[in-house]
Image (cartoon, rainbow, N blue to C red):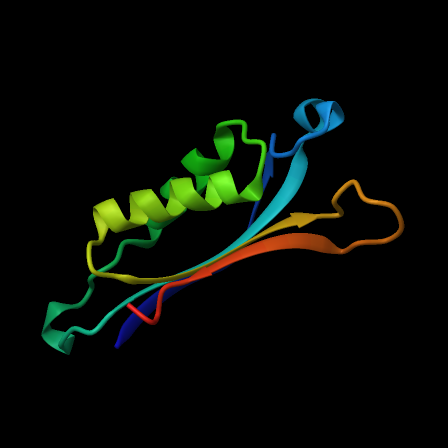
Length: 113
């Protein structure tokens, strides 16, 4: 199994339900890995730069929910790399909730494909 991963990729994005989130934006952190069971002779299989561009493009568009961003990323990765195992977490750092909350997070892991 060959895997490429990007970890701790950070952006400022207009993701959230509250009006102030659209103005101030939120810091988003993404961890993503893509994997395929391929022989060594087929490497390199994944392009870090293309994967990063998908992440960047997906957070540039305003969204109400982290789930919306997650779906954009998954759809683009599956289009670029069909039959790929994708693991992704998207965190909204310091979400606007009472008290101290380090982050809210959504996760996707299709390893049971």
